[in-house]
Image 1 (cartoon, protein in one colour):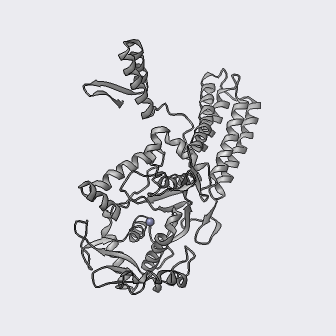
Image 2: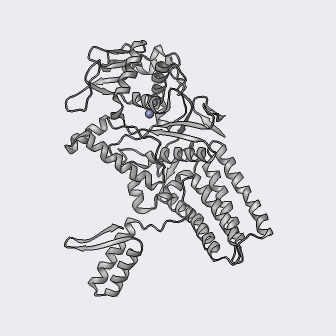
Image 3: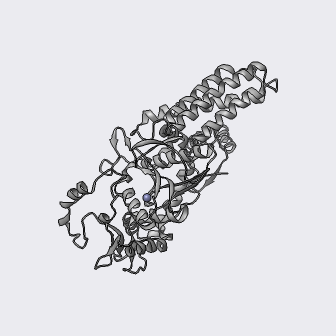
Length: 469
Ligand SMILES: [Zn+2]
């Protein structure tokens, strides 16, 4: 299995630190709002990496954090007049719902920054003791970047270039830093902000230190894969390397994986353009499996453009798989004969070619687009070769293969009977119209149809309410 390592800028053979095991850390979201589709991309990509590693027989310890103390969370809390904790808890819970919809497996551990403050203070103390960090007069603790000779090795920036880039910023008042390159490990509290006591001042951690600490605590000083969006390479991941390697005297992560950007209608997602699309919005229109398919249909290191047309295309393509799987299921159930004939056995042996192609694609730096192409070849093969005369074994083995390969990508080949919120609302509106028109037969029919899909209606004074059974 080869993967592209940002550190070496090459595709490298994956060799785990410990045989049969993978220690993997993925930077998670800052929880101050519903997640957008830019957040969803690394979640889906690295969940797929994990699933493929598991398919290959590795035991994967997958850690992904929630950043639950941050300026944006505090700002939102002040706007709403609630605590920062209330904001972060709300959006962690909403994020988990979206992840579930996208079929992202729960991490082995999802640490939260606010629960790990002790570890952060202890790592900062070690860095201070070793001379890699220093407290300023107001209690802010900075990392002494120039002391770490390898700084810049991930982003392939050299210290001199960084230095000249920073010189123009030096006038901005951060004069208590020894050097403009130094970054914050701990900062003093401001009025109304969450804070914790520390040897330097009451305050809160900088963002970078949390990942170094959580990775160390849950995975150890050395990990196999550290991953995230490419916007995190500098400074976040560069700073994580500096903190961890200076604290632990070990190489922090062997492989660094980064996914490329996601654009919307060929434009960057940005606040000023107002073109943020949340996963929740998408879920009102599509099963989130479609979003997952859409993301996997491109290589993770290529920029991806989101558009309505491409989502429609993804929906149709995914349906070709689910239709084929449904057909195989029917054929298996209705088959006249049990065991596969010799001719069918020959065909089953041939179909292994698609599994091989799938694995070759995934082994080549997780080329999910080619892996999907292999699944479509299997779909075509099944559609061509399975008929009413097929044995249940033949249809069954093809179905199992299809389901298994899709599962590696986190796609459910067997269609969920689930009904979307929007369809429910539409049916309820239609039922109201029918009742107004005194067409009670149709109104009852809709109620029964919804009930069959597990939706319970309740007529209340404030209108029709519904819930899932
Ligand atoms: Zn991180």
